[in-house]
Image (cartoon, rainbow, N blue to C red; front, side):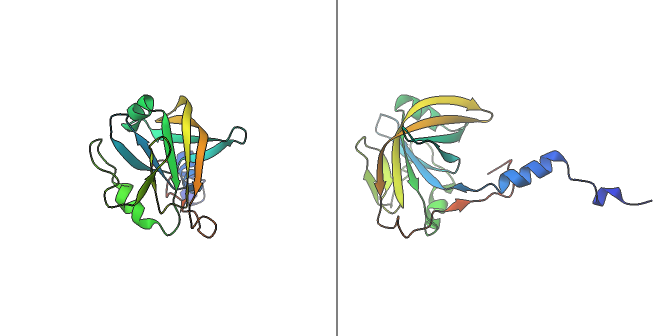
Length: 171
């Protein structure tokens, strides 16, 4: 009797998880404000350009995030492009912040015209207005029209950070 288990193809979910996990994405710090003086930032990797004219991005956020309430109140966000040299930001923002916790303590930030915090050390940033939101399974997908941008000193020579996951079914 031969062992067919070692030669049979893996189940679809296992294969799907491997391929989705190896699909690269950039690493961004999404920042927003709540309109009542609070501000926060979170790591976001499901960000993709969605349109040339007007320039738009799609941004997927887990439905469990409190940022959805903030984006409903102030439908604007800034996306800070992180570089390979910005690993310390992964540690700083990786655990997440509660709504009243100061997310930018000890970090150099500037402000966009609409008051959104942006990291002074990021490779660059894009600011935009949310133009639509739709459900996407366990995430909400935001379509964001870009209204402002800033290129920081290291943009030309810096390499953007790329995120590769072990599985397409978790972060």
